[in-house]
Image (cartoon, rainbow, N blue to C red; front, top):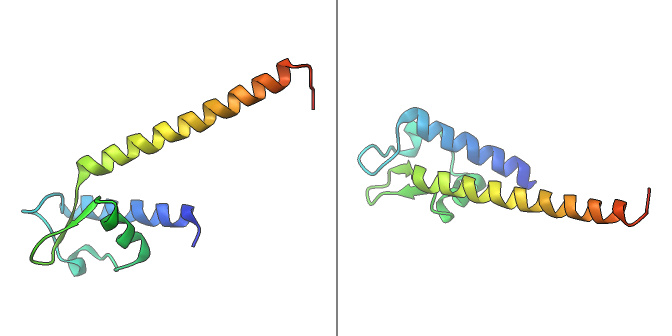
Amino acid sequence: MPVVVIKLQEKKIIREFLMKGALNKETAKPLNELYVSNSHAFSRLISKGLVIRTEDGRYYADMDRVEEQGKSNRMKSLIVIAIIVIILFAYFTSGHIF
C-alpha cells in the first residue's frame, strides 16, 4: 500500500480519536466505540507510540506525541525543499539553462 494512503488513514484514525475524546487513559475507548479497524495504519500508530493501549484493552491518542511527530515531519519537508532549492540555484547560476 502506498505511503500516502497509509498516512491519510492514520490522520483519519487520529481524527476519530479526537472526535470521540479518547485522549488519555481515563477517556480511552474500546475499538468498537471508535469505529477503527485493526488495520496496518492503526498498527503503525501503535508502534510509533501515537496510539496507546491501556491495560484493560481500551485505546487513546497521545496528542503530545502526535503534535511532536507533525513538527518533525514538517521539519523534514522543509529540509528537503531547501536542498532542492540549493541544487536548482547552483545549477542555474553555473551557466546551465535547461
